[in-house]
Length: 529
Ligand SMILES: Cc1cc2nc3c(=O)[nH]c(=O)nc-3n(C[C@H](O)[C@H](O)[C@H](O)COP(=O)(O)OP(=O)(O)OC[C@H]3O[C@@H](n4cnc5c(N)ncnc54)[C@H](O)[C@@H]3O)c2cc1C
Image (cartoon, rainbow, N blue to C red; front, side):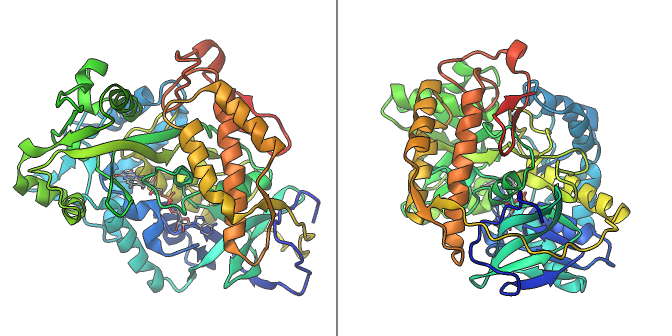
């Protein structure tokens, strides 16, 4: 085992650590991870590992639906054109081609595994979201993600080749001679080394790092941090999409009000009661999310700090039927969509950056794969077209499974344990601070001078504490600090504004210098290529 092994757990000696062996380890129980596990050959012995329970995944929280060209007036080329346009010059066209061409088959895959979607007599009931030129969002009321998540999860116990292991935290990837041989987890508080011939990271994104986020606070990019430590190339970390319309409950939870509400005709009003979006963008309320988010921030600054969603004209019946989850959640706080203006504000929602992969989910580390929100396939470019991400999880999850099924690695086991390395990390006390830092310095509006100052300060005075390797929280804190730094470094490197990334000191797009991807790799300076 060479010295680039990236274990952050200390004191473990060969023999003192539990060891498991599988053919394939899939980390993550969201749409991407479950799609991979269910699509792998039933002859393979698979561990599907999840750090908490299924309800904390972004998949479970997804409301609006899944975009795919399945309507009679639609086709994959139109879906491709919309995705490329919203991605603002940074999509990888070959990845978007795969996403959109394989979209209809992905919907069939979900249906054939028991997922139900709303339908009309004429076929699937398709709705429209921002940036789409057609109605193409397949949905199940406003809890499409829960429907997908629960349906796929129900199938797992039937597959005797899949061991689903909950409450198991990925710490690091095992690397020997530059290749992946498994991973290290914390299970029931103890380190476990899992050997495998292929490891799939489907650990989700990192928008939960931000203090104001629609994601669970556990969605912090653990898999991306581990892949980075293992030497994998990370790309486009500065691109974080902010969802314009989130509502803060009385209990302090940031709850998403799906874009489909605006798709069905809800307006945005400023504190003077005026519609303002048409003054910012010809598509009004259905402009790309970054534009709507920045317009809301602008209106909040120039008004009394509040912007509202107005769905009163849509009528109670449609609202309470179509938007069951949102309706019920708002009612808990005595807000009724047909009666009240709902105060909304942007929140970090979707992370575009992640582990660089090709169109088969292969990372730059042999036998390490990634898919779903943890991967940077290049399908979203500088901005994600709404409802393309559940689709990405299914399309690329199936591809990863296919490539592993086809070329199941014929190689020997790696028998050595990694040398025990104790990394310095950040104490769990620091976690909340990083969320505030990201909101303030890497939010919807950024300033290079401030980011530069902050990075300097973070390097001078790290919030240091020893990692205690028995504690998930402390490993998590280490990841949070590492991810914060990666985001800030990428945001500082992109001296322009494009898609979700807006720099007040460089407010224009600069194709000549920045129509490139941001690349980060351990031990190397951030670069653009
Ligand atoms: C509120 C909300 C609404 C959304 N609505 C939509 C929508 O309508 N349409 C759409 O296309 N997209 C939507 N999205 C985005 C979409 O839900 C996600 O991009 C997608 O579900 C990501 O799937 P995934 O499988 O990659 O990750 P996730 O679903 O987030 O799953 C990640 C899994 O990895 C596990 N994990 C993470 N770290 C570790 C670790 N260290 N060890 C072990 N396990 C780990 C987690 O426990 C989890 O099981 C929404 C997101 C949110 C938050």
